[in-house]
Length: 126
Image 1 (tube, rainbow, N blue to C red):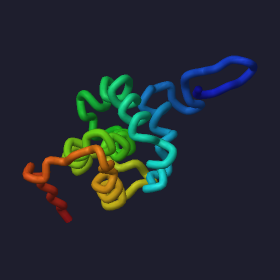
Image 2 (cartoon, rainbow, N blue to C red; image 1 turned 90 degrees about the horizontal axis):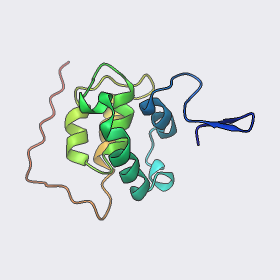
Image 3 (cartoon, rainbow, N blue to C red; image 1 turned 180 degrees about the vertical axis):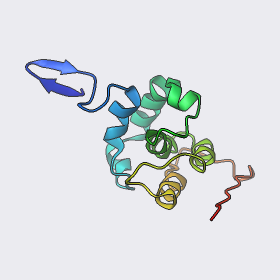
Image 4 (cartoon, one colour; image 1 turned 60 degrees about the vertical axis):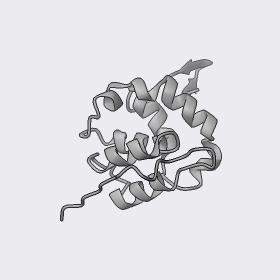
């Protein structure tokens, strides 16, 4: 719904009117328990109908920290692509790269099949 105030419904947040923020705020904190509230059907519809079309995702804008949250969530639908993009994404202040990668890697559902023969290369520079 967004914000319900004065008998009106607003599709925004109090801090940013971008769709990625409106949906992304519902993904915080990143936790394995999120799978209970954010079902596969919901995540799939949200990703396909709204988030996958946003410029932050289409252009893979790695400088906007919200992308890291969207990619962890999107791993439910497309794990390998999310993992590939997460390695270069700027992390949200409350999200470490290791926690984001772990959560994205473990988001596969029983009915989501990952091509294990595809090489996913992750290089960490220290």
